[in-house]
Length: 117
Figure: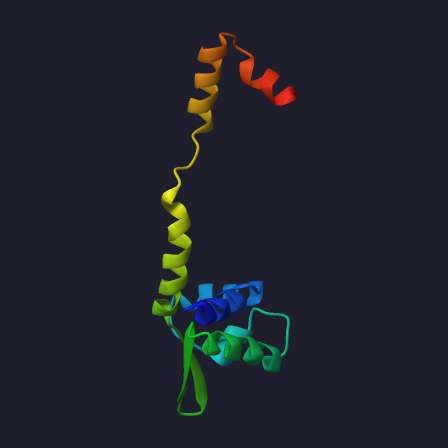
């Protein structure tokens, strides 16, 4: 599992690839349509698409003369489960923490004085 997670996270590390995935959320797209908003060559976009396909994040198929890309959202499930394991910790409510400190220390400016130390 670690190897597939490594491949997925490596693919997601690049902002261009993340943008491509975001674009494919809407619908399947032809490779030329995927390339259109980027200031790079079609060959460079094809390399990005190959990395996304190797990670299983997209699939590609030929329809006539056109190569289409499709998002494969299930490929993100293992990464999502891994990341959610860190969600077991409750987020800190800073307003409640400030109110607690103010009440415990008995001064209105207690949090500021603590932060200055």
